[in-house]
Length: 468
Image 1 (tube, rainbow, N blue to C red):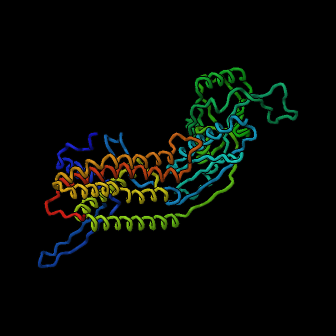
Image 2: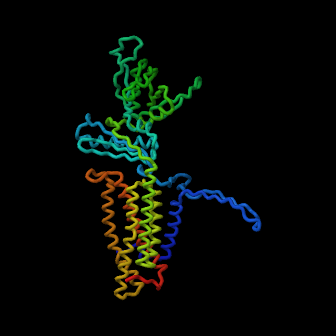
Image 3: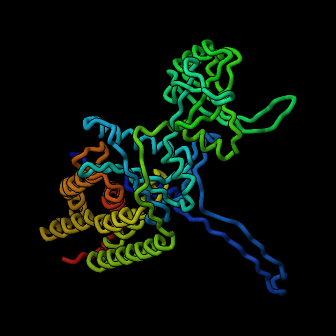
């Protein structure tokens, strides 16, 4: 089998690597304010030097905004803090065979609602154990969540009802009795907030405009045609919102709800309607807040552990393999830079288990180099020329490196469970660990084999001494 980059000019490969490193450093660079305010001595002219700029913290912006990417690090709940909510799904009115589908549908609706609220780093998971059906929602970076939880958990059942002329109210001027019409939120295509722009008396009052799909528009037309001069009521969660008298048939499939809404309430209502109704009722069982201080403390300890681990690995490689160890350490630093850039570019939501996967992958990143260097030592013991020993060390180790890492990649695939198989783990923290571990393996194959090999080819000299 052909080995990676086997016949490439090593200098050309290293030039490409240097370009790559420059690019990832730009991505990794944090926001750094640079301020210089210094006055030169009179002997040097006494000029005052002022420099005030901010470097780093760059975002991707290309093709006149067609490609945009926020390159900030995404933090999970255990790092950024936030709220974790456990909700119970009431499946009492759902048949046993349909409960799994209902739970998945509930998850989809809640995810849409969270996205419409603009909460970017939310996690929605399901759990079904011993007949209990639960939804776990984690809102990272959110602390004032009353409005968000109301929007997530509210049913928002929209339906239209017509005046029941066969059963008029017994008291004069009372609200008429209404019966269900064949029109509901399922026929809704889009809801938007509009404002009163009446030319004579403009109140600026927020209203909600409903746009029905083709089937809903036809139903709404039939309802208004048959009920001219009568009231058609709009109900939300079995509460009447408005019951206007139909003056004429509405043919364009658009309806306006005006119920003296505030702007904020109108926006919440539109969010609920666009997200759809929950397929089953839910109630909040537990709400847990994670403070950002605890998360930051955990991050600091994890980063310290990572630096200690990296330092020990570098020290071991240099002590045991000399100049080869130095080149492997350079590749390891490049590994760290590339990994962080990929985390920001994908983006990867960084959690404490994810950090654990990254720290573990630091040690695994040099496994390939250890196999290669030990193979080189075996070749030298057979009195082979140094140049041949080096090439054989890299070439003949590749199959072992590939197979060993393939086994770990398969394990990471099982833990990540991308196809949502019920017999495999679906926990968010486990998936975060699997994702960072898998990314670390792929990147370590690039840095540990390709970069180290070409560093050795270009910079290795005859004075290399390797411990036998």
